[in-house]
Amino acid sequence: MTKMTLGKPLSWAAGLALAASLTACGGSGGTAGGTASATVSSSSSSGSSASSPSSSTPSSSSTGRTIAITVTGNKVSPTPTTVSLRVGESLTLTVTSDHADQLHLHGFEIEKDLVAGKPLSVTVTGAQPGVYDVETHHPELRLLKIAVQ
Image 1 (spheres, rainbow, N blue to C red):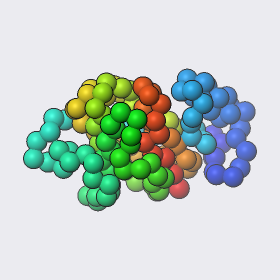
Image 2: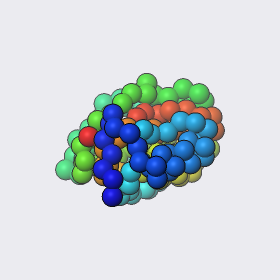
Image 3: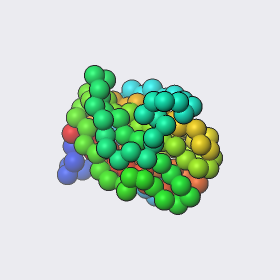
């Protein structure tokens, strides 16, 4: 298996996989391919932190960090940024959209439907170093980038 790091050329197979992911999502994607473990769940708003998805401050827990993201029309809150994640570290994203959409985490091979007004939580663990886009498809919006180091 070829180990990929930022700043080094991709192998032919990795380049082909990257080209396929770029074609599937209109040209935005990560800079390296990778795999990761993931857990996805939907939750309804209750008294938990999921009821305040506009929080821009990542929180820490024994299982990793959590970031809440809200999509309203074409606006993403908090403003898209790059989040650093160590190999083996977990990150939970809780995404709430005001409209039905699709959430895509490049490099983690996750595509999940977003239901209007219903928070969707996705937990990923960085497995391969690289920078990966997290986006919606309708409209195409970048929510953040995950930089696995």
